[in-house]
Amino acid sequence: MFFRVLTIRLCCQAVRAKVKFIRNSWLNNYTKAIDINKNYQAAYYNRGTLYNNLGEFSNAIEDFNKSIELFENSESFNNRGFSKHSLGAYEAAIKDFNKAIEMDKQNSSALCNRGIARYNIGDIKGACSDWKKACALGDKDACENFKEFCKDYK
Image (cartoon, rainbow, N blue to C red; front, side, top):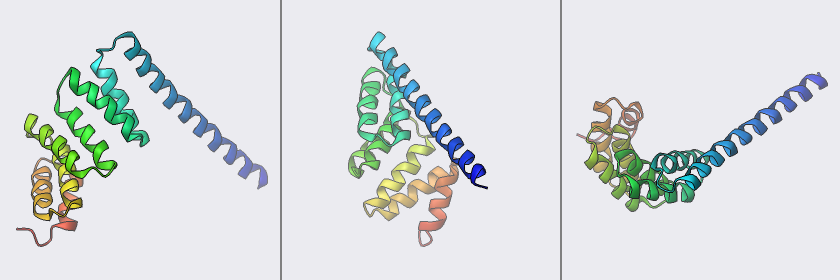
């Protein structure tokens, strides 16, 4: 039994090491691409998304700022809004979500995210409205949020 536990522990350590290696490889690749071409919008966007996934929201915001500077698009505003929201900057996040929705009225992710930010500042009616719209567009998370938090919403 001891050897089995030791083997499992070693496998877990190996997996963590591989994940860390892969993460660092991706970060290094995006950084190298940016070093080669400072105007490579997709590299900033992708590295920002990776930083978001890693919980490095300040770094993500920097990359999304540059991505937006090079090419304004709904997803960059949505992802930067997510980063700001994750840092507790709800009003700033809502501005980014507004811009994302203005650019793409069908962006259910931005609608759902704005709903969460609105909920966090106490705008329950606004949150429920956003979740209802996002749910109608097929966003399952928005549907769940609407069911759970908007029982009294009409």
